[in-house]
Length: 224
Image 1 (cartoon, rainbow, N blue to C red):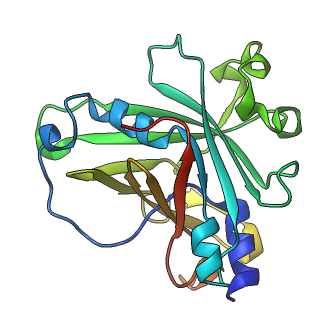
Image 2 (image 1 turned 90 degrees about the vertical axis):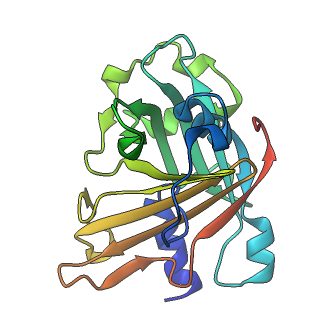
Image 3 (image 1 turned 180 degrees about the vertical axis):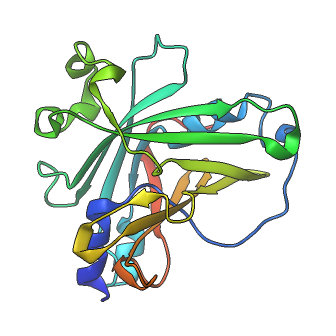
């Protein structure tokens, strides 16, 4: 269930991060910008797990792109997301659209930034679309399919990081006999840690990384 299982996990993964609880810090300690804008800046760009793969054979070298789309929209920051194993960049195993936005809140302790997940109507038509805006000119959010329950909600914030996860049992999955999937995410300016796992009715893990999250290092694009 090590390297081979890890690849299956990638096919259903969402960016996710390390587990554990952290002391909550003030917004000002992160950045003066709204938190959703900070999350979007940290997400935008190109990332790779090459360093981790070189050190641990249980992890593949994966390339991750977060490409901003629809910059004119005022309902959040939208991204085209593409993941592929190095050496097969023309055959991405995962393509999604994310909407990053701040949930309304009246108190600091209720602050949350959500990354909502959508499926594309024809993923093959968007392969390598991270390198261009053209393919999204005729696409609209209404054309997408929302994956209810699979959104990652960031609720833990600190100096130079933010962390979130999917809700327990909320994200349905049928991959390799799973009933639901979980994702946790830890963002920082130059790194994304993602841990995605599939679970059956008995809460036994049936796919996903076992020993810890994938660690994606920034190799290009936006940062603070």
